[in-house]
Length: 526
Image (cartoon, rainbow, N blue to C red; front, side, top):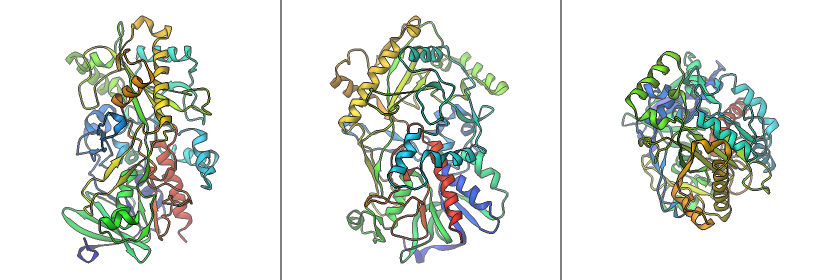
């Protein structure tokens, strides 16, 4: 596609590509200044579908092309050579419109690590004021449903040294607590709800849906806007001040590569004109892999029986309709726990997502028997993968390779986490429910058998980060002001800039990055 073939769409001070968690917040903060104009481009559609607002609607929005990009990962040798579904939001609000709504800042050590790499003003103490500011717009609630089996699991965890705490987000997540969620009176509170809708009345903000960014426009080394496709027509838009990529850890490196910023050798093979050799673009991809161990239980109610009963479905629907409580308000995971997989770990490095349900994979029916799923994940994986475009075609999904469990360290943490889970399930507090492990099953007992089981059970929690990481070394893509290295007037502001993943769910840290990024953009306005 050549720039001359594109129809001019006008010019704005700031043009933001991507109306996900980061893009919605950026649009709000930048357009708060009435002297500037802002255009927000979103490839997906409006977030007005019923199942987006209902919290349990993730069962219908994930793996649905109406709301999800429906990516697939490349087969991973240590994941039993499986390719897995890789959900990314394709709707206003992005992943915040389809995620599990868990609000988790991460741990102090995460941000102090970023700062120790040379990223100025990114420590925990630097981050706290920004968290507090964005939390003024977010509605954060405790769960609106209780499960006896989940409460019993928390007591069992306490028997194993994981103490109950009131909530996470204090900087040290050691302990066990119900997850807090971005909800308002039992309804999803997405980035659209928190940041975009309150700004839509502003005359200086334009939001365009169905607009797929195909490349960044450059004059020499200056980014001057984007080209985008809308209703089969190609348009060009000019950014007078800055162009901002907020397309996430898959989309942002994809567009950079399509635009000539990436590994020179890779781009040459695809006959893409080089703008800037940046070998780190698309590299450093990593994620939280969860090991979904599952247990049948007795003498207690779980979501399985309710969801498989017409009466149960009706009861859940009526409770939600009239009270905004009950199972329809819940993400899959109700309870979280953080611990060290072994005493040598400096801070908690494993997290459990405890679910009063079981199923083979999301999108499939729940099992017909009562069950609980205590999924355990490695918070600081050392395995790294990549996102690499396959061709010059912007519509072709890039190659997404995670290399899960490819390092001995990650395999050891997986095995240690599974053994820890078994200790909790064997604790006294759970014995009256007669837990019976059916995935992977007690036959898996040696380290090698548990490694194999981890590969067969492991799946993503949809936390991809790191593909445009900030820093100053040769593999960094952006500096600590989130400016793309080697070019001018271009920033990446989304989860892709994380040098290392945070210890926990990544939506709140993505908001943090956008809040800080907006301040950086405004500070450089003059």
